[in-house]
Image (cartoon, rainbow, N blue to C red; front, side):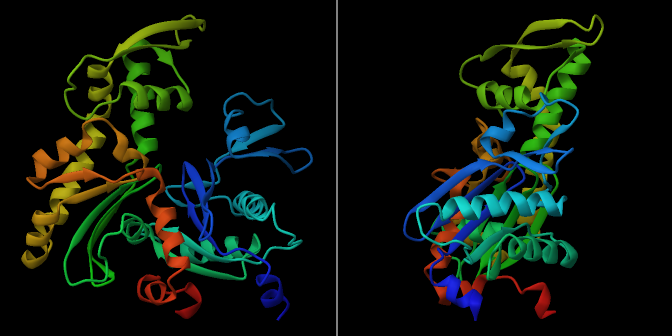
Length: 347
């Protein structure tokens, strides 16, 4: 009863709890928070020093008693306490302009397709511990498809490939459910690690994850690009131990990422090959939609289209599709009832 009373003064929230970024939206104001999923903690006092963008700036730069932690791995909670603190911070921040002392919002949160019951329960528990009075779980490809305004409840197939930071979800959706799907532990973070490994092997230079991310965004391509791209980067020479500057090209970065990218493409083809023929004809007509930050890699849509022989398009603002879908569901209880995943408590 007390929770219900506080809930009247709280805003319903849609949350995309991603490996790389956490996004929060409300039905009234749309996306209000878009920050990295990073928390800086003082290990001596157990005090949270920074969350989000401020904490990300500390990655790789902290003294021994401060840890910059990424509390999610492959789209699931790997550090319960830190995830709880991060979510509580974001929920409180979403209620900054209201007079609620203890927010108790209704929360819709995206989960990966291949999540186990234990991982599902961890997500529910951590969101409730952070202050939610009610939690609804929605599979991320479904939320992304709703965010792109695809006809998910109709008797026609839509295919979505959601390439996030920790996982890639490939799903064929029809009549409000996933007919055929696959979850891969290959995504944006994997590509960053490929770049780090390549530069280490080719140049004996060690770079950090943030530098690898910048390289991927600036000159990363999935296919031969129309113009040659180059950039200068700095790292630590593993032989001398001193700083070193090198110039790298898009060709080298494409070579570094090629194995991971082709695994994603091959799995998209496998899903198409194992999807019922009636649905494949719909996919051929409407095409594949790419969402998530990884879909912004230059030329990826073209590579998938050539390999799968199906039209492919990148969604508008692909980073926010999941949270936009959660926002639409907050305002549509009927659709939410059709597409939400069963709670771990119902089983």
